[in-house]
Structures are given as structure tokens and as C-alpha cells.
Length: 266
Image 1 (spheres, rainbow, N blue to C red):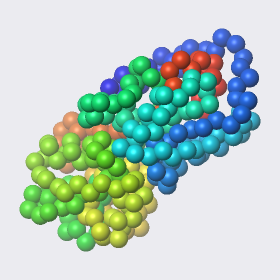
Image 2: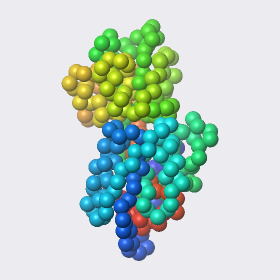
Image 3: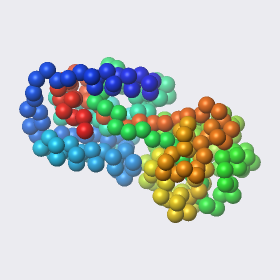
Image 4: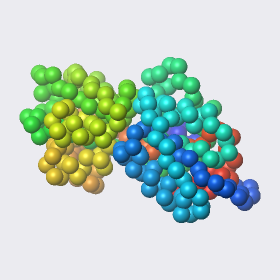
């Protein structure tokens, strides 16, 4: 599904607008279906500033969180196709959630028109310094022998939940999943020692690992991340073929004119 999303975006990016547009004539709303303060929200606000400066109208962020991104995603699917409601979202509601939530009220191909894939990122497994582990192998052994609490930002289907589940099923251990409103809350409780572990967006925890406030055990991508070159990959830890990354994508409701979508690419 992730590859299909990439292909749809690439094909759309090759289509040029047929004529000039006066859009936007007023402010544009970007719905971010996760809480404020997380990596997605931070990137969305940078993107909104850039679009506002380039197109001469305010691009306003509206955080509409719920059910791991499904609530805000559904709102955009039902919005008008006039270019004044955009969606900035993790790819998971569009790629993984159809398998997890059988009654979704939106569909990638039916309800959305792609603008661009803005960024991709891996997940880093981090633990509180009090947890007596120093590697992925240590963590797996510890989790098989102890009750480990794992925090993630949202209901099932968020990136941290999905990545941990993939590792858990492959390595054969159990954890106690603790669902938070968003990643900022997970990070706060990890640093405070209220939860033991979390798979979180690598850019959001690299600084805390360098400061010694968290221990970084492994990253989910096939290659090590430049920001934390000393943290090995899951594949290096013995789980061959493990390669999980996520994307930040911008979309509009279906039938939004290609000329508007082209102007929105930052």
C-alpha cells in the first residue's frame, strides 16, 4: 500500500496545470489529524509558513486528532474539492488502517488526490535509562522475562504501535501497550520514567538520546540514520529484512483541480 501511495503521487506530479489559477483567494485550511506538538504538526507548520509566503494567503493548521489519524482524514475526504481544505497526514491511515479498521469511511483512491510525499522517517526504539538493557537483544530478553510497558501516540495503527507489533511478532515477546493522545505525551512519560519503552519518530528522540535522557537501542529502517549513526538497525540486531519507514504526505479531496494541486507543492 505504501508503494501504491508513492506511485500515485509520482504520476500526479508529472501532470502540469492546463491554465493559470487565481487560487488561493482566501485562507486555506490544512487539517493535521494528530495532536499539536508532534513531528507531523511541527512539519505541517513549517510547510504552512512556506506556502503562505509563496502564495500570498494564510495557510492555517487545524489539529483534528482521533483514532490514530482517522478522524481528521475522514473530515478531509468529505470536504469540498475547491482547494481550501488540505490534508497533511502520516501515510498510515491510508495504507495500514484499511486492514485494521474494516469500517473506514474513506478510501485512498476514491476520496483523495495526492499532492506530494513531503518526507519519510524511521522509528527508534528508546527506553528510560533505568531499564537495564543496552541493545535490541537485551531488550528482547528483558521483555520475555518482565512486564514491559510500551507507549505509543494514539490508538492501534499509529507508527509506534505498528513498528513494535512487527518486531514483537518476529522476536516473540509481549508488552503492555499504553496508548497516549500523541507522541509528545509519550516522550514526556518516557523521560519521566512512567513508561519504559517506545518506538518513536527518530528525529523526535535523537536529541534526548544524545543528552542521555533516553537510551536508543535500534532504528526500524534498513540503514542507520545519519542523525544517530551509532544506533544499529533492527536488521543488524538479527532480524533480517526488517525495514519499516513512514511518510508524511499532503493530499486534497478527490476531484480537486490538478492546477491547484500543482501550486500547492512546496
